[in-house]
Image (cartoon, rainbow, N blue to C red; front, side, top):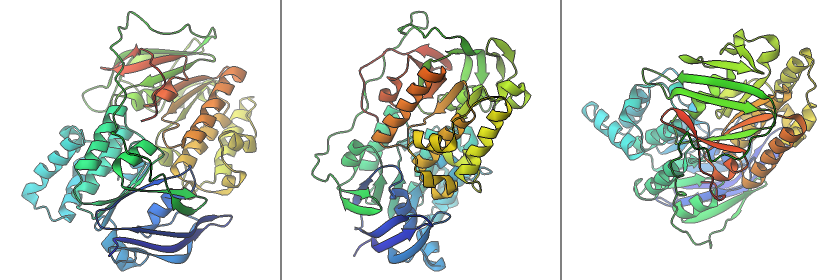
Amino acid sequence: MSLVDVTRLELTSADRSVLADCSLTIRPGERVGLVGRSGSGKTALAHALFGHTRTGIARTGGSVRVAGHDPFTAAGARRVRGRAAAYVPQDCASALPAERRIGWLLDRAARRAGVPRAGLAPARDAVMGSLGLDPGLARAFPHQVSGGQAQRVALATALLAGAELLVLDEPTSGLDPRAAADLVRLLRRGTGAVAMLLISHDHDIVAEVTTRRLAMEKGGLAVGPSDRPARPFSPPAPAPAASPRRSAEPPRPGGAALLRAEGITAGHGAEPVLRGTDLELRAGECVAVMGPSGVGKTTLARVLAGGLAPDAGRLWLREEPCPWPVTRRRGGDRLLVAHVDQDSRGALNPRETVAVALRRARRAALRRGLVPEPAAELLRAVALPAASAGRVPGELSGGERQRVNLARALAAAPQVLLCDEVTASLDPDTERRVLALLAELRTERDLAVLLITHSAAVAATADRVLELRHGLLVPAVRHRDRERV
């Protein structure tokens, strides 16, 4: 008997077919990989296993059964969601309840699986340790953890719930190479006989973890590269330690300094993750920042963007002293720095169409005498179809939302662009197009770019590569381009 049985499923929106004649079976304990381009329908299929469709999408045909239950009925949904099956989404940070501590979320999952009250803390600590999470994070709120940590917290809740099926949507996209390799080993050996649907753009991870592979093409399923031999997945070798006094940097672009920060100290709670670090971005320059998940890269971006006030430090924009909070910056300086946050769902208004979001950003730029690109050109530049202008965030895939975030940031005609894992949810072809766009803007508009990434291949496109280590930014030794992990 199949654990999952999807028969001729059809999902449609007002202007397109999302899934067409889509059928899938997963046996108990079977591990199935699903690959495909951004926006091809992978996440829509994952949602359908839980009886959920995005806003504007309707089921127009076919059936879904998970552990014998129809998740599109109220009774079936109660038996499937968080019990028979557990879902680890792409945007974990915004999916976790903001008002609840991490420990409460994990304990709730364990209680669902029948763990007695006396066993909650040991069960929680065990699964957090297996995923490389500090048990102290149980006291933290979701907004106080990095994107990679939020992803592992979501996986921990799924494991504690004792589900028969794990649906993992890009589970390594927010993780550094070492953490990704650890997660792959855990998924292979540490999840028992649980069945799995693994959605990823990384074919190597899919080949290593799963036994059957499928490809999503234009809303339908096709046999994937199942004959591709699985090879042991391992992260690239870590960069050798680099002394802050001895830089391995190439010569910098000769543009003026657009952003300079000194002595940044910031974090959540008593222990700062940034400890007096400095950074300078010049016109036309691209600087990549790498480092393990949770080391403070996202905190750095939010501080520089003006959304998080540091405990200490000074900021200059265009060589003029500037306050940290964006609300206190002068009119012209408010649009000088744009931020593409890794939490693409939380960054967008769920009720606002893409067209409205771009229009608001462009109007803000026009009021300051700037000349932003037309909205249609921005969508084309980030590889989104013109029809996406009429959609709300809930109708978009994770990769599409991230590209909307990028387009909105560029619509404000900034001089400095802060990109936090902007390519993490993209397939390789779309990633190349986005990186080519950033390179073009640097050349044509002297745009300064900060790329926060775990990908060595993405970092290799930068003029300088820095590593955030022990709260300080230090030059990283350059290596050969490596495959994205």
